[in-house]
Amino acid sequence: MRPMAGRTLDFIFDFGSPNAYLAYRALPPILARTSARLRLLPCLLGGIFKATGNQSPFAAFGHVKGKLAYEELETRRFIARHALTRFRMNPHFPVNTLQLMRGLVAAQKAGAGERYVEAGLAGMWEEGRKMDDPAVLGEVLSAAGLDAGALLAATGDPAIKAELAANTEAAVARGVFGIPTFFVDAEMWFGKDRLHEVEAALGPA
Image (cartoon, rainbow, N blue to C red):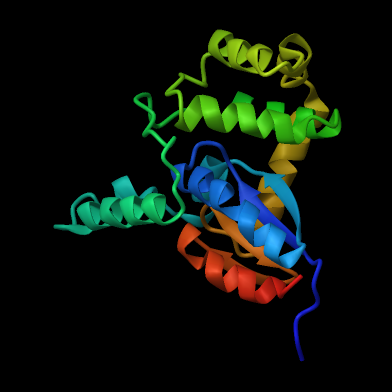
């Protein structure tokens, strides 16, 4: 039986993952070919790691000869394959994304989620900004035409904090152990290199 077109693609997302940036930038042609609707679910990668006992590749594989060099090679191949020439490794990496992610929850509630994501991704992975500095974050959001004052204020709202924490807990309950993770219905895929399988599951437009 052929998969239904127009499905929803859940993307477990945190700005702090360079692979989340790369996957997000590679998604538009897939969404166009499948007529899928993207649902970006803000979660805290650090919270996912803590709940699952996972680590970043740098921590987990830094001692394995050749492993990180190969990961970098695969990243360069992915960038070339999808022409993601604006990507730059953030010089402040790793960046604490707690406030940035709370801001995304607030922006989504205000109907400005897509603009916020574009601003956050550009600041983090194209412009090399220190996005855990509230002043820098405010500058990036203002430059994108967003209400930086309101969004930054909302990051202190207990309801916003609770929603981000609940999203993270729900992701772990679904089996998530890292980012980027994708779901089509109950089926899960991890990593930017599984996008071809995600597209197959979404089906043709």
